[in-house]
Length: 339
Image (cartoon, rainbow, N blue to C red; front, side, top):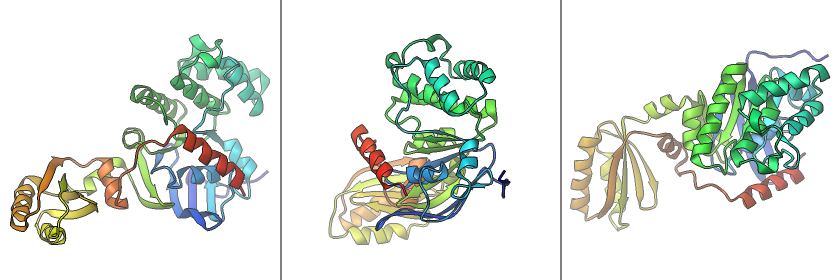
């Protein structure tokens, strides 16, 4: 039997890298996840979230670097890793022609749960995810949120130490999404479980995670609690949309000289300023624009959000949700490229 070589963290990666030909999907990624923590990977589609998760769940081999789950190396000890994890993929894996309970029975057998424990474990998770009254109905009659809850239940049956949730609410409406967050928090408390979530929803990362790693272009930009990230941005965010003109560069130069402005991000005609005293900064912005003949189309002052943090570190916003077709196409491509 293999002995765990490091149990300080539930998850630990060191210089983890994954390449597909000339494309580097995961680029020298290092991070740790504490036991009992809800840790989030926040980034757009194609940022490297799912590829990292597939390495951590032994579905892909890294090109280089190291990853440990509960002390077991994902490459050297994949069997022990799988015994310690639950993995819920983006796309539902339940059989829609079986009932909810029949799906869980199948999952229990695949996970080699002792026969004398199967009924109680299924009863427990069905109650936890509030599907007891629907357990004998075919899954084809379930809503998207109910199917996702059943997927999560299947990942809990063998009582893993670490639960991986890959985009757990993608494609769901906001009300259902928030309900899933409640179930995830409930599971976290009930099982005192480490949960690793990948998401491109800002609110999901903000509301659900103890700490968040922002990943973009395969590289981690920053890791911290959502609140600390927002606090570090300064007190306020000023968003400006201007008319492009010949004095644009001079306009930016003068704004950077304003005492309370700590950082400026540019995205075409849209400027995002981080400032410690927005009410004093805004009049100075109007004064500079008037002197240089720059037309301001709109200006707003808000408190920092996780969106602002993401823009600050990556220089761009997370775009809208990908179509289901593209997500499935990417998932199929990943299957073909597994090393």
